[in-house]
Image 1: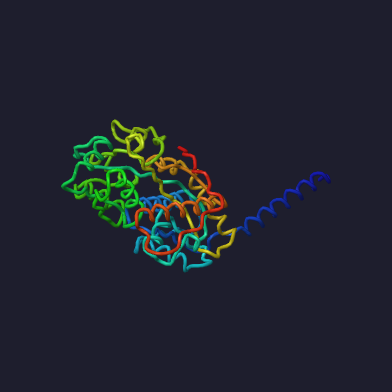
Image 2: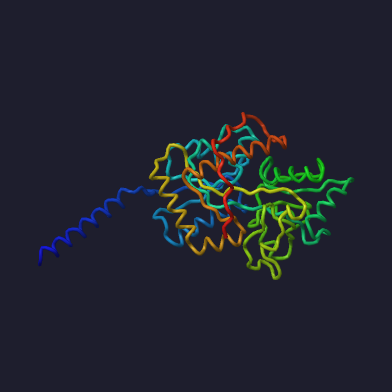
Length: 352
């Protein structure tokens, strides 16, 4: 064997050894990972978390199992406090929605997003104004006109929780229709909210797309408008005649109300950078699957991803925004206003 061949073999062996050492030193879970959902079953956060669990299992993206646990008591405070108290535990993660911001301000529970470690924004969730298929109004304008004209009654708006996203949007609608035109009725989760609207127990809801898509596809509900600045980019038919992109924005329907909700991942405080990096990489792998792309379109999500400093800045800005919205609506229970972030990031661009 020549010296050149021996040298080449030695270099290859050294490279393989270095690769093996690097792989061995990278952190990964050594026991089952608990995936906390700070909300009830059937809602958007629950559906996304269980979907993610299924994708990870299907594609063998993690050696250890992921166990999904609902802890929605106290508007999600149960789940947030558990993660807050699990400092340094890299085997516990939580999926967050905007109750990450609304629950502390609305209930006074001793918790803040600063008590956890940001991992990644998975997507932004939309909101839709829904009515029963038998409702007399076919457009958002007809609906709002009916609300304004209903001097002898108040419309029942069903939503998930109190002083959270759905009620914040309802309060914003009341600014347009004139004060106190709605009776807001809270339920435990988006699945129950959709069921109540199908049964005509409420007049309308502002459920996320994924929480009412089955009822829309089945012909039981009608979407009136999307609470975003522009229409959805998803053009595939959901019903025989309509796609998400066919739903007009509330703004173009005469309702100047916009709102989107975080679907993000956090860990307890005190975790190590390589532990955070493992989950960032894990969720990038999840997002690269065809399953994820199908799930995003099914739920009409704004498929935006963030991690690192960008995500931290976005979260800080969103916290300040929610405080301002809740203060205006009179939903603040206690606590000082958050400090404004040094530089609020631009709104994420919508991606299909």
